[in-house]
Image (cartoon, rainbow, N blue to C red; front, side, top):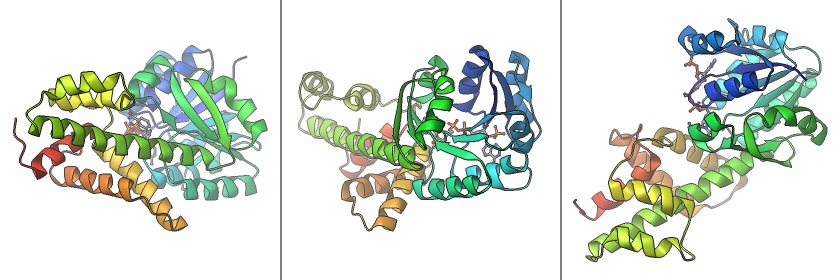
Length: 294
Ligand code: NAP
């Protein structure tokens, strides 16, 4: 069945995701700040709109894929935002990675206006977005999830309703903790091998088959060995996500010592001009601290 859907935020992730909805046969109304971001989608058959409100006026389900919490707030609530066009009962689906606390507030505000919300952040990167194989972690009401699920299936494969509003963002924060701390562990282990005079590539090979094996050892470990930090997932985005993790932990009075340490190393990367590198570049900080040269 053709559904009229909206898509706001057409960057590395939003562009291919909107395209996959279009390819699945839906009528897709799109918006980004710059006309240049909308042009290729309009050429592909999507309908470009000047404002988020115009997208919302045409769609039953409105997807958002922008950078950070203030961007989502702006797109939904500010002048020309989604609330100024949305039809009663429409669903706002935020797929950006943002604060769980702010997400719960947004959901409450939308509900007070007769609108539904799901938070549905993703994992899988640009490759997953292009191939329609993203993991999608959803927070919201089960009935609303069931309504949107066929649309999620055009963009992802592993689609899980985790809990109520905000639970999707909590799951994504958990994902980023595991990825960050594992990157740190892999960087330290491979540097330990190198400093010991043992080939770190051989160590990685040996570890991949055992309990220390992981996707991070495989993918990020290879980037570290090759000294090639082409993203991938940029340090500035990973740092943004760790900031969400640490801020939320602070609100809860929760200590996350390992995550906090990795965030310091990401801060250092930002300060040394490496914001655009893949976050596996944490390796550079570990090497620098102990004078490891290659
Ligand atoms: P991106 O390439 O920077 O794209 C962001 C898009 O949002 C752009 O099209 C931008 O418009 C639009 N936008 C931002 N603020 C806006 C506003 N206030 N009003 C209207 N449009 C606005 O970012 P991305 O890599 O696609 O990431 C999007 C989200 O997905 C982030 O939360 C990120 O953490 C998450 N994520 C990313 C990856 C990844 O591998 N990149 C993986 C998983 C999750 P313009 O084009 O006009 O500038």
